[in-house]
Length: 430
Ligand SMILES: [Zn+2]
Image (cartoon, rainbow, N blue to C red; front, top):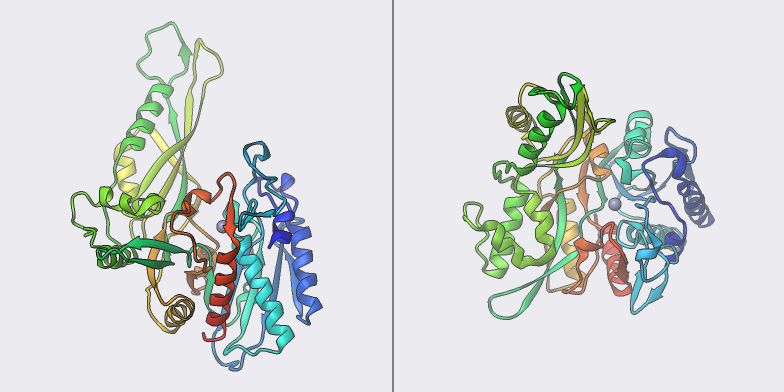
């Protein structure tokens, strides 16, 4: 795990400055081959954007394969903000510290350790397990999962289900009788990601003249309207099930029709920032660009808006956006990845439940929707049923959501040991 963190696999979003994945992938490949795996090392469309695949054969070759995937890249870290070197993988105070500790070199470490253990011990799981270590998740998978799905679908031949991030972590909630319960959140859905570029075009001219057709003003109005707009609350199946389970455990009034649902959610702590974002579509302006001289009114002004859209809402969302931005502003998608949702049922979900309960009798798995996106979006295009299940038992007071892409990212050593045990149980019984 620390070894994984010591590979600086920072993904800047630009292929020229994203360099570490290949070294890390070569090391993973060597670790797998050392215990007897046949591996495949694949560069996904750009030099150095490296992925490694290996399969552990199962008892029943007729069953659909299970894909266990983890991405090797991380978001960059500003070392001066951290209390440890973000690429040291330091172990102190019971934690492994470093960029990627929870996103998601924790899962890389657990998957690699189990893959090696199974092979060394001659373990045969019930069905084939495909281990995949991937590039470029942090920039949307264009040079990773998306490329592989498009250009190498053969790698996923026979795969019916997949587990990866972001799920399996515990959320401790207080029950009305004073006891507590650990909920393990299993990701069954993801909002769509749509980065939208807005362009206002009007008449250029001298800044001293009367000028009521100004692209900057038109764009600013559209951006302000979008940024302040609240899209309607839409209850999806996964969010509804999550709220019902939490209400049942805590006695909190988290009914979909409750007027202060969002206030009540905050009692759950930092996870409310994710859950709250899955109640409705969002459109957050993130970039603005216009003008080149103080006394020149430019002909165009542009903005980028980070839109996250609930399953089934894309058309309605676009109609609502068009009504807000008005006819003088055009929009185009810079990046667009569809939402995804599956149901919380079936043998694989039963296996997750059983694995969690075997190692935490006070645990309960509940489905939830991720407000962001993962590589699951790419695999879902192939008809693979995807879940976020990278198990970790976390201390109740740890701000887990805040650690994602955050300063001093770290993971408890105990959580990793627990997670590896749960994952082992799950893989050997699914
Ligand atoms: Zn991640």
